[in-house]
Image (cartoon, rainbow, N blue to C red; front, side, top):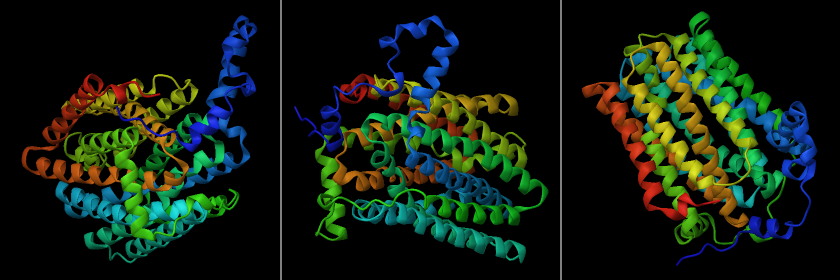
Amino acid sequence: MLRDPPTTAQRREDDREETPVRGGTRLDAQPERAAATSRLIGGLASARTFESLRDRDFRWFFIATLGLNATMNMQLLARGYLVFELTGSYAALGTMALFLSVVMLGFSLYGGVLADRSSKRVMVQLGELGGALTAAAVAVLLFMDQLRYEHLLIAAMAQGATSGMIFPALQSMPPEIVGPSRLQNAVSLNMAGMNSMRLLGPTLGGILLAIIGAEWVYVLMTALFVVSIVLFLRVPKRAPEPSQTSKRGGIGEIREGVSYALRTPTVFLLLALSFVTSLLGMPYIRILPGFVADVLNGDAAQLGLMMSVAGLGSLVGALALASLAPRGRGKLLLLSVAVTGLGLTAFSASSNYLLSLLLMGIVGLGEAGRQALNNVLLHTHVDDAYRGRMASIFMMQVGTMALGAFAVGLISEVVGPQVGLGSFSLLLVLTAIAAYALVPRLRDMQ
């Protein structure tokens, strides 16, 4: 039977097994708290839910990431709205997603190599600078009334290139900052911040689109990129350890990372699950502008509210996950996949806007668990020397999402978005059931 080699993080954790838990997070060891319910709740929130925010470096990382996530979510809404306004085509939405993702995948593999051998913070800042320049260019075209669909495709490809540099570095920073013992909490809090921006970003973007136009949305996005760049200066710049650098060169290091993923069963299963669930469960994001307009008869403001409710569901899910002890995470991961699939299946069948809002909140709840737990388990079981490259391979789920969005877009053109989205959602539910029944290594993962 194949066994995974112990990771650097696990070896460090073993060395610290006898260290007392800080902050009273082990409530069973302090039964006196049970006498006061308010103290119990307050102690739980301060000691576990927001535990990682006690770390100064993580606080600055968290705040800087908020600006980046706000911009990304506003960009997702604004670009999708503009594409559908210019073309009225679901296929155009899917094609744009495909262009962005193909470029992102090409850059992310090398971005993972750079994340393993250079400063992750500097990589994030350089990527954000590219994002700011792209957003500013779109704003200028809008002010000049010269924007065309082709320009948005170019902007999507530029975002794909910058995102391919940003996200492998960004995803591999929390383990360096907080260590393995707080990793689930840190990743969950970071996802909570991301989803709070999913809540606020689209709402603000939808309001600005409806009141003063897309040009000001892109002006605001440019400013948020710049603010995030400045805030990241407060996060210490960490150089990689000498053992994490390689003399193989970029292509050789990429091959080395792929070989590591293929020969490490736990890592392979987690990556495979992320690819399949993104293919089946994430395309709804790309076709949502058309779905809201055609099926729910909504406008830009209602589209923004829909995305915000999904963000609210994800925020609730991420905060709940941050409060949980790290037990039964494999089962919880598969449960989250099933919740996402069931929520999307019901959403695809609904033509009532208020009911669809509720269902989108359930989808967001499931997605928070799926993304956070998949990420946490991956970084728990991967060795430090491969962390950036595994983050870049993990990012390849964006490519499968793009393929799914492209397929759903084409199906929606022929038979309608409800059938296109519903068929993929049912397959997602079946995937969760099959993985639980047939893959015990994944189901029993801790």
